[in-house]
Length: 154
View 1 (cartoon, rainbow, N blue to C red):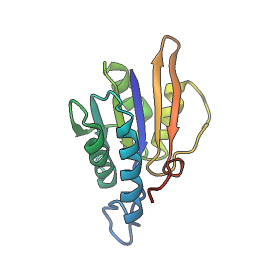
View 2: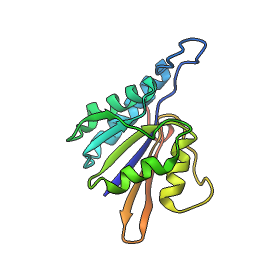
View 3: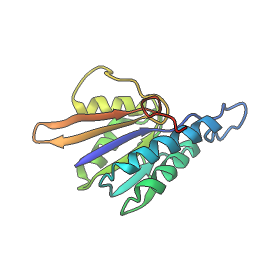
């Protein structure tokens, strides 16, 4: 089983739009990463996102390229300051591969909790995907994909 942790794409400043939708750069980066991940043909049951607009927009873009079997839905425990134990419990009880779209600092703390470490070991830039795999020894880091690691199309 895999869990994919995705940070939402770059968002507009609150002063520009209080709902903080994705910026033009955010849309472009999320689409580029989602298209690339879609080419990997990952098994994915569901995409869950926080109640923030930028996370929902990111999740819906990934869904276009990944076609999760159970679709996309808003879920509890994915907001910036939420306790990572909420999402961890949901992950541990879900029997299939799952993508969670959220925010910092929550995603970093969730990754640390799943990996059993007490410090941050990687950055989570906007539109980044961190893939963890469940093994007999617990959760392991499989790969990280950032917008900067994907060549831009010419």
